[in-house]
Length: 105
Ligand code: FES
Image (cartoon, rainbow, N blue to C red):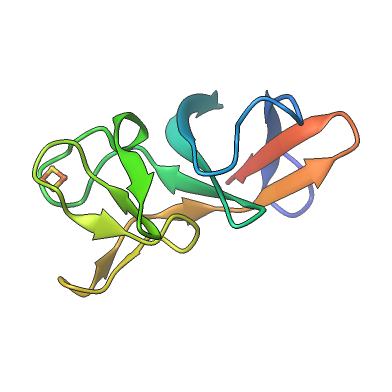
């Protein structure tokens, strides 16, 4: 554990995730949907708040991450769901020289 209470985990190579893609990664004990959207990376808890669908198995279309189970739509970076007013838990992401890191507290 660092002084800030956040542990950083390297989860992907810099060129591993194409723009508009989502992938399941593990950071510590967390399973996370890593997204690449509009040149930025997002780290959303893999568990959909609705009924637990695996968000990393969803797709990013028309600017939203679509849950594969019932189609709820979340912002790929902020995790916000406009239609239902709830959000997926997100984690900080850092793009470093040797890869993409996610911080988990
Ligand atoms: S579990 Fe994700 S929309 Fe239902």
